[in-house]
Length: 342
Image (cartoon, rainbow, N blue to C red; front, side):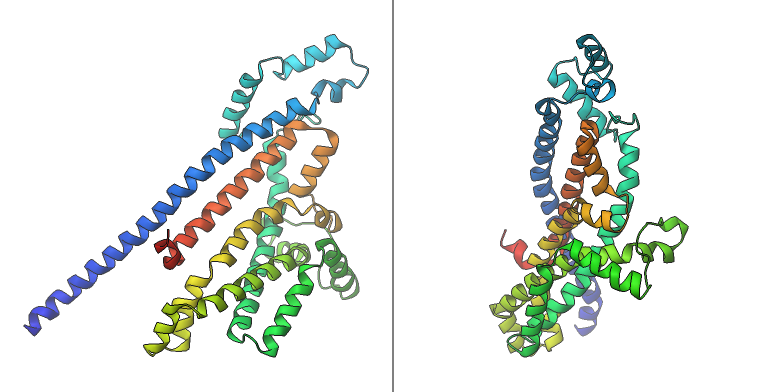
């Protein structure tokens, strides 16, 4: 009997492992389906509203190219060249199908391909935003975890006070201070400019460190506060009490139960922060002399370059949808408790 049990034990373990894998895959697939059901209509509506901005703005490429003194015949000729003499829905469908193929149109001002222009600026902004997010997540998780583990102590209060202070510090103020201290006085980092990663990891990371630090403060504060609050709440749940009663070590209780079920709000915060970091870096890019996505959006809006602004909005929508989709999939994988409640 013992020999038979020994022979069947590996098969039983494989069956259980397979069932768990299928369950996890089903949970992720369910989250993907729910996200798609939300994000696809949002993308369609958002792109339609984005395209409608041109009609509502009253702007025309003829006014930019010919000036305010252009004759009606010249304006009509230029607008026909851009396809603006077609019905609105026809224009939208042509533009939308181009967007689905990755073509965002041509700039009214420079005549350059907008996808190329956005790609150049987006590479800069994504580098800075990604590094800022990494700094914010690492430091925020560290501070939030320490504060939760040492809750109600002096250390907890010190961390809470620190994140409160940095949360109200504007990124441009932090950027100016960083340039003054770390770049000008100590000369540890370059004060401005950008070097692509292809030209060397060292120069690339050196040029994006200060702007990333300036943008990371808000992420650190939000992640730390959300994580501390959710971890403290998780410590009061019945499943944690049961794990402690069963004699599990504090580390197993924390990593196996508290962190896994209390990480949700912090992950949701990250999902909201990354697109905001990319889109809200205009002032920071000015301070550090970066030709990024934010500056391109600002320059395009000031010039009345509607196709460029529409391209910026489309890319922003895609970033928001894609990153939140990733966060939802991660939540579905690491938060079994929340999924059981859905």
